[in-house]
Length: 335
Image (cartoon, helix red, strand yellow):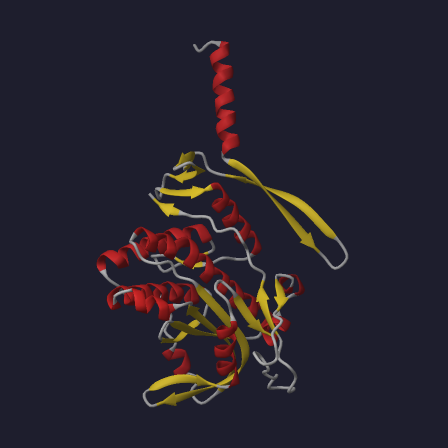
């Protein structure tokens, strides 16, 4: 039978291990006339996670996926999961509300693509069937442009096959996210993915879902795609996203179905104004969001010689808004 001192020491060590697998997130909830602060205690499963220091960086080893997650990265993941319903599509085609799982699966897909070549999976929702069922109709949709920044400069420094790999990886991973958020890939235009999301009965819910889709795109690019690209000697990607809401008509141009309308045109202009890692939305999207969600945005102040577009409904100056930036950029990597 262990001595009393050994039992005490054993309890002390187990207590330290338990403490090492817990951390606290401080959150603020704002109402119309009050502000409440509270703490969330995050407890990791000791059967799955081990606290480790790798290359001088303190974090957690996920023994199920052999993934090392720095401590600040894990806090950011949980923070993002609390702020928004991060979704992803698993290899089994099922929807998941788990940013961490989406990052790990995206990393695995990108590694496989770089080793074995690109293959688009059937989980990516095709747009042709939806468009064909609404041919020649006018529909309210939310349009999203996700664009790679400085792809022209990359084309001057990378061989054509490596540049093609970068663009294919970007397009496939963005397509997975679009499908997870119930959107449709309209087309791939050079280094840009163009998607649309039917508005349905609740424009506010639809706009929030598309903004969350854009946030997931930034997170997957930063923490999944770029981590693998660095391992394989590729340059990291930087992306920017533009979003707007409005009426568009579904038409057939030659043998291709497409969307035509003011919203398509103005969203292309919006994404041009966005900076790397920025999400910029039009006023109609902003107006549809709930008040709590609006606080995540700030108005984009632009000179009139740079942006002077008008509201197609009322002819007024069309304001743009950008999601407030997050500065923390931790790493998550498979080992």
